Image (cartoon, rainbow, N blue to C red; front, side, top):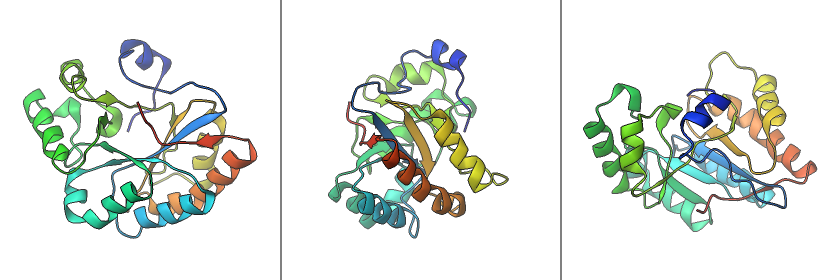
Length: 202
């Protein structure tokens, strides 16, 4: 994934980077699932804190683990399309990329889309915007980085989160070690500061 800069927001104003509102609302999001042993752990923890989130799902994972996908929906979380098998827009032809998004749509029913790695071409945006709200982020936890520590990951979240922030974690095997250390502390921090995590609904 790419760390988002103010320049990127100016270049791509048609994408959703945050959702400013009131009452200190923030939006926890999880990419790359559903993943057994990770997504269900995330949902158990969210239930403890009575928090709802948004899961940007890979179509191939929903196809393989439909019971986890249905649990996400049944517990009141939102879902979004994250392509079928994690295609990188910059390295994929527009035709193949859009075909991959449509393949995911067979398994993930949503009007929300997040490009894997945050990398997407202008032409791809133009086509996808016809059916989806493209959701980016303004807080990247970097839980997926092999070299990151739990302390650094938590600092990324704490330092950047403000009212309306869209926060990215990953419910994947790769990120699970850091995620399981940092997500409980993140939820504690958000609660202490009066932030209200909500699912994305636009």
